[in-house]
Length: 166
Image 1: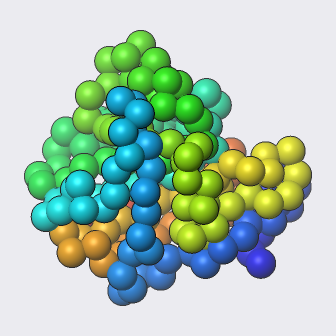
Image 2 (image 1 turned 180 degrees about the horizontal axis):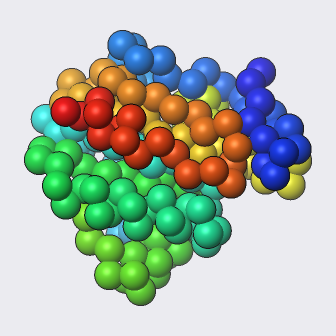
């Protein structure tokens, strides 16, 4: 089992985090229209999965805003913000912030995503949420960048994610 920290306190993370070069694990998540989506719904596009604990926390909000800004410059790329939040939270946040270059997706119907993608916080007060991570997939759903952020309150390495898309 891996660990990250939250304000310096160790937190267990269950599952197998995707490695660069491997095929992306399957996923089914729920979008803001309460419809289920899979990787096939984004076929032929590169995908940036900005995996976060909750859109209603400062660092998660910041990374969503930053990826929204960066996404406007990326051709044939979709940015998917994944959390355990209900779809309504993502819709509310993006609407209030005027964000239209990211798509928020929820694990609420499919909690198995968290372990399948190696981001299942499994101890501490955030047990049941996703760890902060960024996984970039090419148009064939192969992992070309993977970062499990070591400190939950830390932003991801945006430049490394962009470099993988160059």
